[in-house]
Amino acid sequence: MSTDPAETVALSRYHVIADATNPRLSPAERGSLVRQLARQSHAQPDGSTRVFSRATLDRWVRAYREQGLDGLRPQPRVDLGAVRRHPELLEEAARLRQEIPARSGAQISAILQARHGIRVAERTIRQHLQRRGLQRALLAGPHRVYGRFEADRPNELWIGDVLVGPFVPHPRQPGSQRAYLFVLVDDYSRLLVHARWFPEQTTRAGQEVLRAAIQRRGLPERLYVDNGAPYANAALSRTCAVLGIRLIHSRPYTPEGRGKQERLNRFIRERFLLEAEAQGIASFTELNDRFLAWAEQVCNTRQHAETGQVPLLRFLSQGAARGVEPFLLREAFRAAVLRRVSRTAAVSLAGQRYAVDPALVDRRVELRFDPDDLTRLDVYWEGRSFGCAVPFVIGRNVQSQVPPRAPVTTPPVVTGVDYLGLVLAAHEEQTLGKIAFRDLPGGGRQDVGEAHAPSAAPPEETGSTEEGRP
Image 1: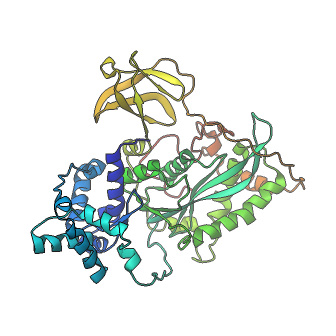
Image 2 (image 1 turned 180 degrees about the horizontal axis):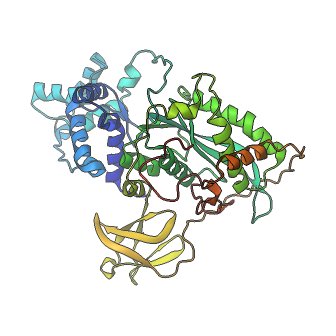
Image 3 (image 1 turned 45 degrees about the horizontal axis):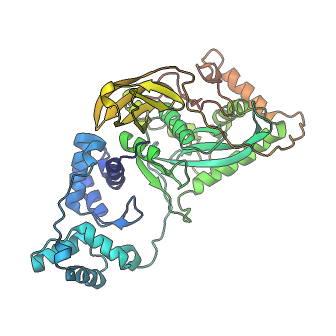
């Protein structure tokens, strides 16, 4: 992923204004929302919190709508050096915050300028108040009370989680390794949007499941996930910013809002994993094939106890979902790394060497690429394109990872009752005459430790979903 500090700031700013960029909002609704955001404190990449003025938020919203993510990159600012000449201003700023804890850094800066005719940067005031322990959150009243919430429409809110599963045999190494299920659920319909088992918890796995889910079900407005490594990373932040998805991380040790996901996890354990472990799991391919059939035949077609409706029918009740253009989808899920060009005008990536423009020798360039296809690398230097890197030798087209070896376990006793086999047979019988999932190009090629191709995605990236298909 790119380590550009300017892009980190741009992603942080988008996280603040994401709700206000929703094209569904009217001008009055957007103005009300921006005023509400201006009264809140927002987390920053360095771990601090900060309050932004209404004018600043409006300027960011306009910049994002006109230029996209690039419009949120910071511009160089001039340091006025007022604090060095008048250190007493910071003490007055602390007294102003203690007098009225709700005062923002921008308001305190305006008061100091009105009284003394000297402008103190809002960032300087905020940092000083943080060192003094005078953050507005710490001076606020009691904790907020959470009420019950449900989305108003399909794809308004997706909830993501990782479920720890059983051990699965490794096809090329002795022993077995733990399986992890990456799950995405639609909050409104309780539909299991997409899920897949992987041999490790990585950023790449989370990206593949999200990409396949968008291709199958459309584009969500918000994504609610925890703070685990697969979700708390720059790759997911950038993907959501490019696609206009509001990314929300739950606060540590505050599981409010994740009850629906936990109930689904319990349902998966009781209705799928118990049967899968009793029958025995031969490989990740078999585990994913059976889970896909069970999800579409059982999980998404049952009557939900809380809504009283079938999740799939409730999801389709308000028409087709909003799709995404293929080129934008490719841009959202691309990876980017920095590499220094050697004296022979070459760069290395994933153990392979590529030739680049000789004018870039000894320069640090950015390589942008699709993680599933290393045959094409776009080269950028200082924001300018320098064409594509030409591979010398292509030995593989997917990044490989060596997972840790898991302890060997004794396989369970087979009783002869293959419930999931029956579900799989019914799924294949229902789709007879149609293109089955495992017949799609690449649909059944993955096994443990191999490339993680999203199994449930269509063979081509399209900007719409097929109405009525699970």
